[in-house]
Length: 231
Image (cartoon, rainbow, N blue to C red; front, side):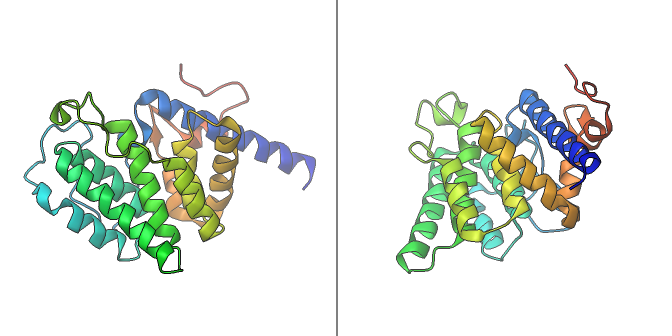
């Protein structure tokens, strides 16, 4: 790699890390930032600020979520589906517990069968991480009940999934979002791998260029050193 390419790559990596940090300052990133999934199927759209189900029957949440996850959906679709599922689950503690319990059993069963499923562990890890950002004792509908993801290491489960899966830039993107508050070295590693993989993943590239708190990652990538970061 010549020096010019190296400098460009290094600057790009720093820029995307700044972009992800900016996103963290805008609110819970796994909830407030919708994932672009093109025309793929997910749960019915719900705004993260919604305090109602918008007519969606919550008793169908586990069934509908599993149907999408079990269809072999790409990682980005899984991320958006689990984001929406968390917003719905926040409205009913029993529904929230049912969903994560089913994902736990699904992942554990794959190990017990001798064929650990990377996507099953990813789903459990990512849902655990979204729950911890959006559900808790302060949630009005939970009335002091504990977060259903208590005791689960969302990031650790996503790392397990990455190990099982091998190279997967979309999982790296998920891990980069989950580690916005640290560990810093892990965050930088995941973000760099996600960015590198986006060269061959147009939808991931679209997500990396989407709006992050009044800026886009593309604007950050093309900004001069020391500029382009909103304060």
